[in-house]
Length: 101
Image (cartoon, rainbow, N blue to C red; front, side, top):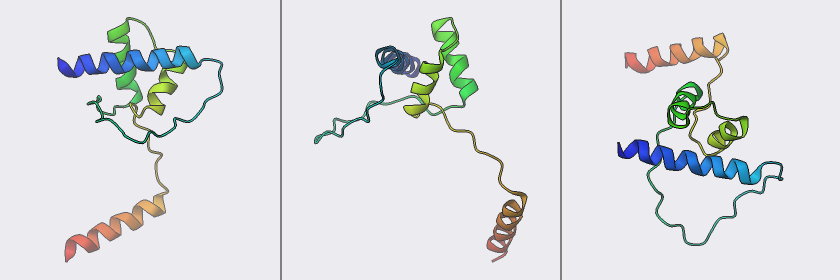
């Protein structure tokens, strides 16, 4: 239950940031000298999982700005592109060699 509350708070901050920065140029965050301890954030999930959870919480589909803000905040895992087949074959061969010793 505590994880859902953290998720809701994080999503609300993402929405607020998306609304406040809509149409404005993006300025990178400036690092501060003393960083406070980081709050516990929800785990990184796939875009589909994030969207489903967002819809469950807010009873609507997320906007593109909300999605992009969630990606920027690291809440959504980037999908890995399939590797070149020759690269996969080399990786498999290396695994076999490493496991045979």
